[in-house]
Length: 165
Image (cartoon, rainbow, N blue to C red; front, side, top):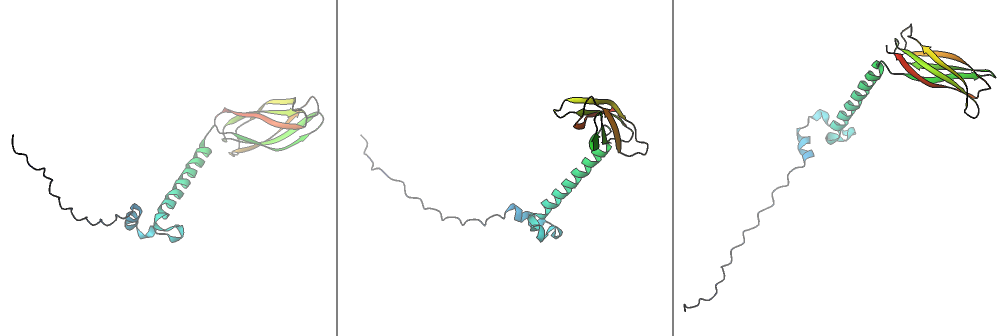
């Protein structure tokens, strides 16, 4: 049998000295601020970190509003209508309303007269609003609706474009 060797323990290794912590890296906002032109530093808008976003947001809102208004004003089949005034007597109801559409478009409306319990007591169909001779977008229309009994309300039931402008 071979001689036994006493168990050996490995020699302790020296612990390396702790490396000094590296300097903290500047925040992204600080690095961007260092490269941002001085004219974007607007203190009353929150300084260099807020002002560029505020300016970009303002531009985005203005661009959206401009595109939206251009779309609405040039959309040929756009139609809007609203009551201006009305008068009611025992056998008829008169309604004056505005119709907003493209100047060369033709619209058609239906006007209803209603009793106190909201039942229909008169209806005028095929109220045609033709092209505006003066090129205006809004046309004022007056309609007299004959009624079977006294009405308490008169309303525009519906309007639609029959010919695009």
